[in-house]
Length: 395
Ligand code: CTP
Image 1 (tube, rainbow, N blue to C red):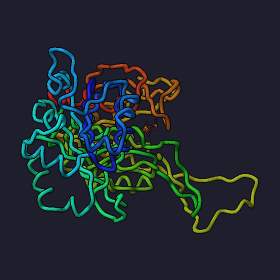
Image 2 (image 1 turned 30 degrees about the horizontal axis):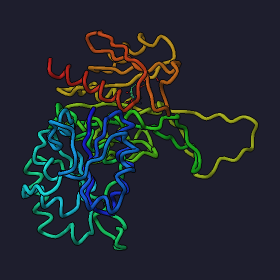
Image 3 (image 1 turned 45 degrees about the vertical axis):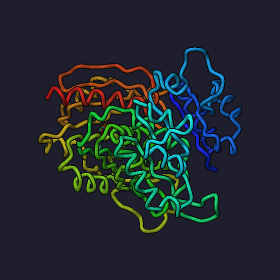
């Protein structure tokens, strides 16, 4: 996303558009803001000018650079037009092709994707006229984002609130992704499993689920249907993803077995506990002795089981290693009958658990190895999916 035109219309949520502009700028895009005259009653254009470092456009008929037609020139090389907040009035104009200000005129000339983020009172939003207009916009190819439910500026509760700027950024990114995995059913496992010792203690690992959740989000962005089987994390389920929450390895095993049958791609990013306490104490274990021995029983290996019943499915595993990284990973790939394994060298700086970045290598079934540089897990998720999409094409 190199160039964004952000259209701001006259609703109270216009103040949140300032944060959205900042997020687009921080993501590396050049942001050009077009405001309707009504929007300037809520936020001063100077705010956007300072945040984006670019001139803010409001008027159709002001002074202009020689030889330039403003609404056409602004659209040159634009990747996406985002209208947030979009009032009922602007939505109606867009649906009917009315061009009475710079933003509505620019919209008619836009050939790039257009994201519309409605924001208004709940009764206005529910009105048939507004709903019909939104349907028309969707038919015309606009990407309409659902408003959030919550307390509205008018004091009532209901659907109509402009979503958080971070969610609008994610939605916009998703719109721009190629839908190369459209229609595929996929399953991702993520996060740690926990094995209880007594009612207040458990054995686990420091996984936060970031990598698995990034993969689930990336799959959804590329058009796949996603089931996310997640151990206990603090993360929010990505929009449009079906999440099944589990705690122990046995629960994860059962959930995976319930859902894997009609999945084309299965990615096991979960950090699974290999062992569980043989005996779970019903009462809290007291510190009566100086040493304590806990006997552990081996858990079932979920991925190994999936590999035995692989069929036409594309199976991806993760390997977290601290020594002989490639040798161990290759051995896991063969033993578990995988198509691809993502190898974490836990000793590399920036790699592994509970950090936003990761540094991995991808090993294919054929033995081909790709070493990837350190990158954010969200970006890495798409690299992994690029590789999967490429391998699926060859199959
Ligand atoms: N895995 C699984 N079920 C288990 C253990 C692991 O499905 N009981 C999956 C993980 O989700 C991961 C892959 O197997 O995709 C490799 O996990 P890892 O812990 O690196 O390897 P293990 O097979 O457990 O081998 P070891 O602990 O001996 O390295």
